[in-house]
Image (cartoon, rainbow, N blue to C red):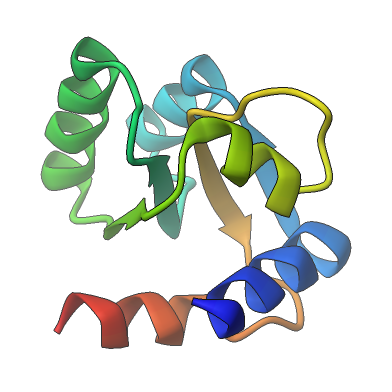
Length: 103
């Protein structure tokens, strides 16, 4: 968990990350996302849309164990973040950590 948060902060700092459900869905639809992170309390309709488009594009989805407030805090934002998409991981190893968590 701590490693994932550290790698997410590194991706925010050195890579390209889009925050928010609409931006995440857009990145999924255009196939730009490499990984999608969803808060555990993300609204059901948004979560279902994200999982649907991620499955179509074969993009992994990581469910963040904390709330959207926690995910926002990890991202360094003073607001809730229900979902985000990693476009470019930068110097982080977040894609490998998400694969380990999935398997």
